[in-house]
Length: 535
Image (cartoon, rainbow, N blue to C red; front, side, top):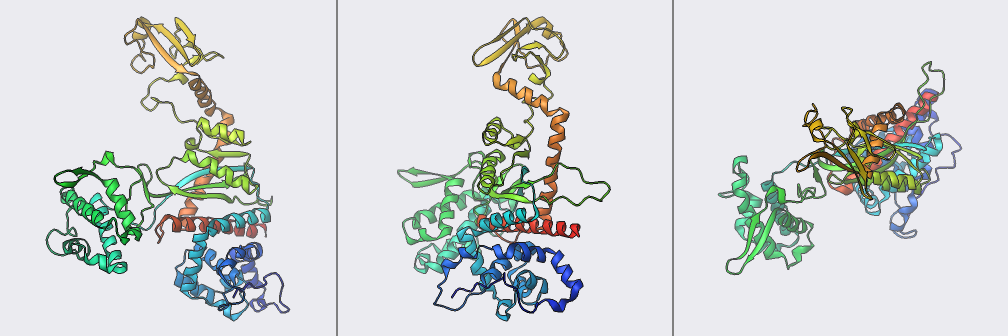
């Protein structure tokens, strides 16, 4: 039976009157007051009603209380046991959740786990973040016309494994699941495989393999992997998630060839032959690798900002807080540039789309600039540095061009002998003798190889990029773009204050759940600080 208590109608006698004025004021100024006043009544409890009957079964816990407890659990990064204790004994939690009935002051850990799983299955973590964040924006009047976008890497609770470790742990996990769910099939597996990969005892087991021996023993593990997959491919073992991981590891780490005489033969792939999105651990097959950021997941965050300087006298009222408006969790091997369009679509659907977006150069491709402009958004992002600039070579930005994009003179002030333009490219030629005597001859982009003159060809798109890069050095651009750096502080608070840098969970679904609700928790903290500053 469904239980939804009325949290709008007040009581004849205030249940919190015993706290007195001072303690009551502390509660109202804290995150508990923000949650109770702005969010509790707007929790999407209707999304969970379909799981229960209105007439049959035991009464549920108050759905407002359960959803609220799940949000507060992520806000404080508590375990299930600590959350149950907080609901039962923490007066701040009880005030935030408006717990009036004795039966609502207790829930067991199993209830908490079940509701959390239902939220993840129905995607309600995204609904909670979006709907409640929109409610906070309306409550405090945050201006969403200016926003900034960036990403950060998050690692789940998984340990790093070598290639040998990935195969060994995948086989071990599969054999344990097979023994639990399909004992008859497990009995058909070679006992030597069970000894090596599950019991890890005796000769040839991989438990004590030294790092120096890992490469030598990798083909042996690959042979065992192929034998196991081949034996059980057409059986009910296919229903096990661990078998899908096993099959995926085989295809990513190994190449299988059919020999007419010897049968299937396996070859361990070289590192450069493997895909970048391969399984890094059977404990978290969703995690991926990025050479720059490491292992884990990439979280995209967009937040509002204000370009108004703080009042140095401290007499003006504080401005509304900056709030996170968009969160997305994806693999590490996807470029940041592909995340701009989904962020704009998400905010547009909620009528909080920005007019100006600040982002770093990874988001500022020409394609993204055109897409943002088409949607009425001004994307302020620096261009990537030109090719060769890091090697201190001359680029088109060092040349002087006319209004048509043709070179007028080189960095040394020499005038070209000819310039020309076709439908798809432009060209400039200099005297070869002049270029040979130039001190920048070795670093110049003009070349005389196979010709009597030094020639340099470039495209119209390259001319546009040059104008954009030169504009990046202007005072106007620097003044607008300097506000982007503020999101780095948000990323730091998201990872360390909200403890996203030390997760106890694995899997993309669980990491997404934590990311959405902890971003919401950070918004709650900011609104609470804003309310306290007003008073």
